[in-house]
Image (cartoon, rainbow, N blue to C red; front, side, top):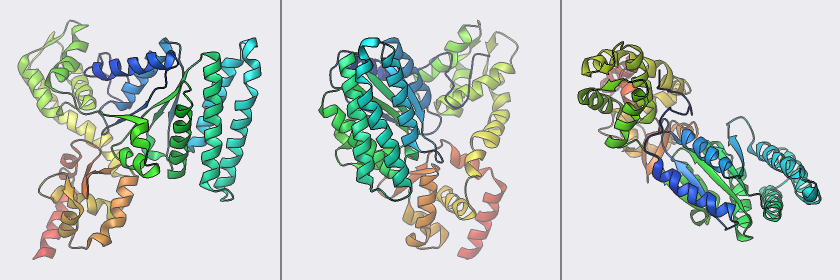
Length: 386
């Protein structure tokens, strides 16, 4: 089966990201030549292929001889220890050349100081400014070493939205200073749409430090490629009607295309897939999403969170304002602000525009409407209105 739905799994054919990859290739070429380069942040909903894209970009960077390390930020794992470990890996590579061994001690000392600073801050003995200075010392020492050894480096950081505010602020400040000194070090990151606000709140100059790129669903032509190209390798084709049906159901979201096409492919014996084949697989497609992709997110919500989500779905359209949600719930905005903050922190919803909210997972509202408890909640809510 040529289709590969999953968390960050590379599809057999990566559709619709050529322009993004070409733009980053130019930045990586500049980095390789020692030219100061802006870092890049990709944002988008779950399932649009952010992780797949940065994994591909890391592969491209490594082919160009750039030292790369991938970090996936986790809610329960500190970022500082991960960046320290990646920095040490860079120094180990540099130290293999005898002529560069003398350049290793300064960044090593900076990394040790960073770890001490972070440990102290965790015990609330150090201020955030100390962590910022320590991480800046690490980045500038690494950058200087990279410059002198002509060994540029790039950190790939996924799930940036899970970074703690003090860690994110320190990272931005360290990267900013390293760029000012013209050292060949850059960052390519990815996260949910909320990261724009996080970066701006952390440091006002972050908008000039990064190139922001939004990753969205595929357009119609790109979706056609994502559907047809993998199957062509196995001499299997789709009718135009079948392709149209898949696009209508998936709305062009890459993960949904991979999921539905995988089901269709495994349930079709012939070399030609038509509209009837697709239609027969739709129930299984939604069953898989409801019991996996959607359910794992829904089960992270408290009872109060779920009522907030139900109210969002009950609004006339999405995105919706928090005042509309409060009105549906018969509560004040301040009374539901805690649930709003919790859902944003959990990565379930995000602020689209000022005071407007939407789900980070495409078609999540459809999943909610299929839940029996949503119907029960609607009945209770209507009775309260009466």
